[in-house]
Image (tube, rainbow, N blue to C red; front, side, top):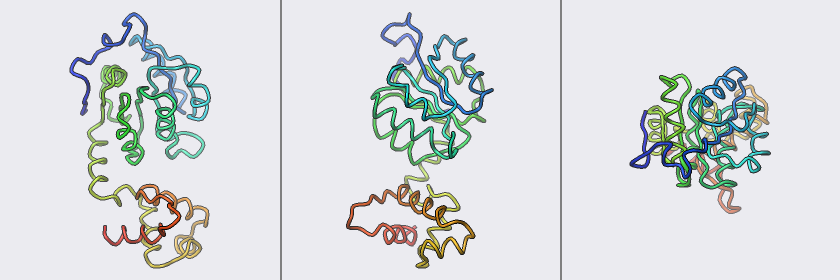
Length: 232
């Protein structure tokens, strides 16, 4: 695991070491959620609330004022990126809150945004690669102290996406962008890929976001996306 954090990271650096670190948890798997609550309790952390989705967490978090939020990346209702988008919203509402993402997937686009904010600790661990419970407990302590703990696989993804923006696209999004480069409309792309027009529109929107193509009202984002594809 790669970690960057203050020189003397420990729970003793908290303003009042006698007060347990307070965290909230969002994880849709009931078994994993309950297991994490017990693990955190054994480590001396207080889970003030645990949720099965990110929406409910966001609705209540400002009342709870936790030190840290632990979130899965893909949760209901779409199981795409609800957790990491919730993390960005948490940072907006509660600057300085620690964020620990636990997932089976790397969602690098939004993680770069979290890192760029420069506020609060940040961790991103892949569930299948957490070697021990002690490792997870240590990550919570580091992130709560304002440090950064990233799985090496996450680091590799971030570096790859920094050098090639197209690397952030999913295979389906690449297919859609390739057909856009052929001059096909959303309807034409849907017919070619045998998917709904709505699905095409969602992929096109995701492409714009991942390539950093904001709607300025003057630039034609579809053309700019195709240019990025040809240059990539």
